[in-house]
Image 1: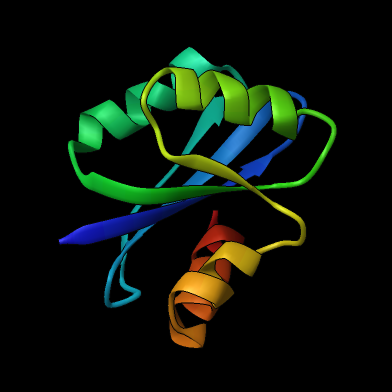
Image 2: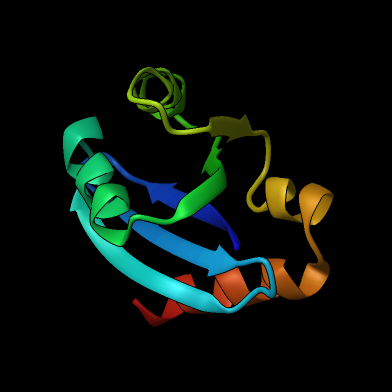
Length: 103
């Protein structure tokens, strides 16, 4: 089963949310905004990740490059959740937003 991740990045902390292809949340977590710490969460889950969407911001270009260098399919989105709107259903986009708000 394919999975999709969204990262909400701030200077100190990144919120990670992973959903399956049905839009169901399978993982929510927080990590320091450090590529190694974020990667640990993905390795722990051992899921097939199709895309990792990262909202455009001051750290985004740096983080996308670092995560791509570690093998994650990270992409920069120009607006929040645009990746999920383009590639998956609106239901998934809404599910992801609700899951992040619960953290």
